[in-house]
Length: 149
Image (cartoon, rainbow, N blue to C red; front, side, top):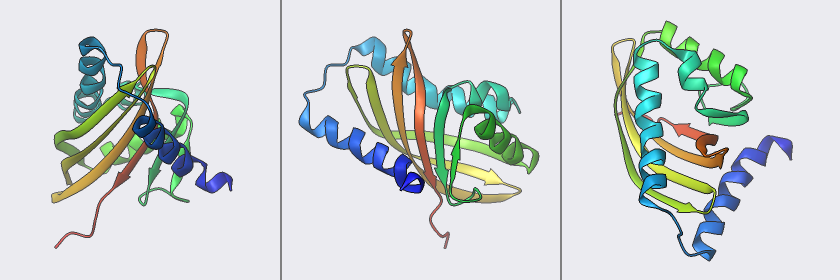
């Protein structure tokens, strides 16, 4: 069951947005949108610590590219980001397709284009964020790279 906890968390948050009216402010939306750019900028300047700082201390990263499919904790996420940077990864673009904010929770769904060791890929992201102490942080981040043609 604990293996599926991050996916259940993402499902529960997305479902809760469908049941509640959005109550975001434009300031919150700008901050939430900015997280994607900050992540991309930190990654591309080889700063895994700055990218990992965008997550809660007990945040989740879910991807087919990590052992066991799930990482938990900022330190583990930082180490994974560093492996990508060291392996020659570069995030070319990030596009948020949709986002919603309800109180202190937000989610975004988007795409990204990356060049990993000279190979271009397009991936999909679902990111769940929570406002803590006036700052939005990533609680759960799911990234998928579909098979490329």
